Image 1: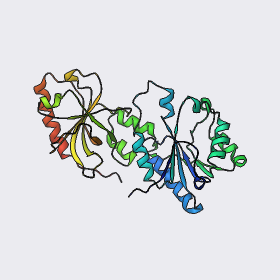
Image 2: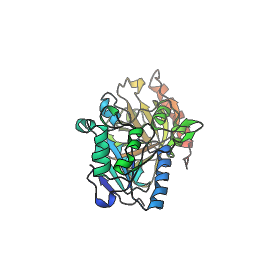
Image 3: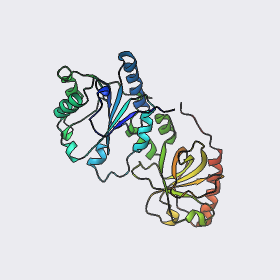
Length: 315
């Protein structure tokens, strides 16, 4: 059972959460590299009897400064909060990243926020952490101000797998290239898209293959194609196996990218239901078929493959 933790939307935290271990970052995907960081923080927690807090930003700064960057996230905010809760943290600060906050200079961030507001004792950051107006602040500036503002910087080495750094950027790239197995390995779980089922054109139903449509929101766009999936409906505990098409439906000249999911051995109305779609295996890339009959023939092949896919543990 996930314990209850304190969620803040600003830096006005309770006294008991000051002088804590603080981890600052986007933590998109909460991948193996992040998990290594939290494991180390947990050791500090035991050794010094301190709370662990997380500072993250919404929207992610890169998306704020690049409005055209519509599809970028590995996990949505709700997923990120739930993943962080499972890592033995005591509080999470989700600071709204807006124009005013982006103008905060780096020294004010250290003095007014890290010191006066949060009064952090240990601060965990990555080596490439940047902060303050125009990204002027870096780890060296944080270290230079340790004694003045009474904190200690901890910057663990990044996690390497086969001599490559595990990062949110590398996971996005794996997803975009169709390397789902590697992305799931780096996440230590199945990559998951969550969202509400929307009314579609019902093209699947017309060809005897009903699907439910989920808006991708600002999730990163994985390689368009067909995937084996397992699905939770309205956060219930029982998974339903299925198959998904992530793409533009070129046979039907669809222009907007969609996630369409067909559930095996399921009947019922899913409109407005909240689905968690876990991606198990990349089956094939998207292609345009000559006609509907060719498409239906391929769908039968895809179904056979998807039904045989096993639920892999990434522990």
